[in-house]
Image (cartoon, rainbow, N blue to C red; front, side):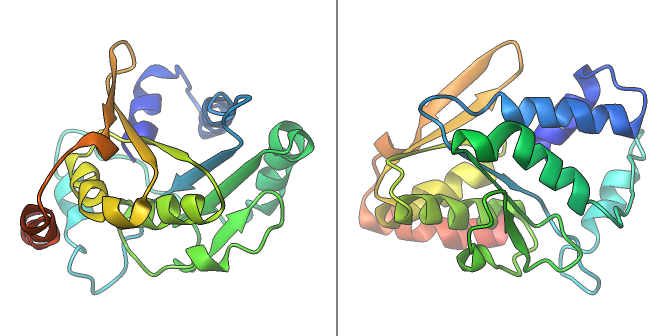
Length: 201
């Protein structure tokens, strides 16, 4: 979500359609000769949820934000896959942004049911996607996020991730890369992180 908000502030888009085009370009630039998979993970705000008050609190500030329901986005996603990824052996994966929070989608048509999750927050979905990337043979995961909660979760789960995990944070002009896999904690400290996150995250 931080990336979406950041793009909204600097993309210069005046319409939602133009913003979508800019977002597609931003996603495409993540692919390279060494990066063949990009996962995009969104939050879900469900009714009667413990997190149900979060959107209300965010909307109480100066910016009311934009709330829209995309009814028919299949064609747009397919065009993105065909024009940028599928023909170059690249894969784009989406989860959390669908009406059914358990849905996950791959631009290659690959079965990604292992990424099916009812997690509301992208924070925990990111860990699931990082684990799946390792299972698929990737030796490095780059997480683009400015949320310290995500770093706490990644550090807590590093023993099961078992590969290089870098977290890109900072600003558009001054980026910072944190080697999460190099953060050393003893077992007691690491095992306490999930409890702290549950209470404060």
